[in-house]
Image 1 (cartoon, rainbow, N blue to C red):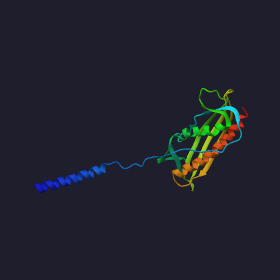
Image 2: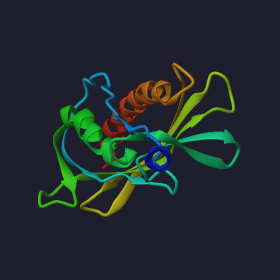
Image 3: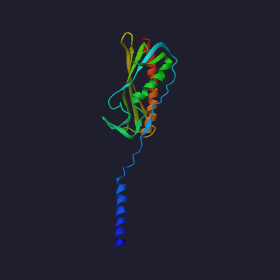
Image 4: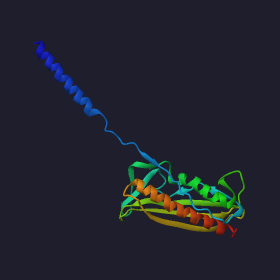
Length: 200
């Protein structure tokens, strides 16, 4: 009788351990975070004006830390475990300041307490990895508007559109390509701001 009870207890223990093991949640891969870190070439031109830079806006679908990609036209998807460290628009703000500071007497945030001669407003229209072609390509589109603050007049508007092949068919390959495309856009944006600031 004792042997039978002992066997039942062993069987029950095994079933209990199996059930507990089956109830454990599946392992979830932790998210990998990426940053924007473009370093545009220096521009010898310089303006004696104060430039205010507002926080960049982003179009719907791109105002998120999620990394966007497309496999089919008009269909936006996001990598599951790869993300930007912040929204791309927020990551872009310090890069704008860093690339434009050497070109102006001062670069200040907008809105802010320091009066400025010019204000730069930007919109991130698109930042996605396009897998409809091979190799996949990063598509980066940024709209910039330069305004004469004192006279409340828009001086110029320009859309910068860059495409760059990815180093590999994954999120990290897209990150490297994004920074190269962004570097070119920041160089073009610096030329734009300097050239148009003379029209104030």
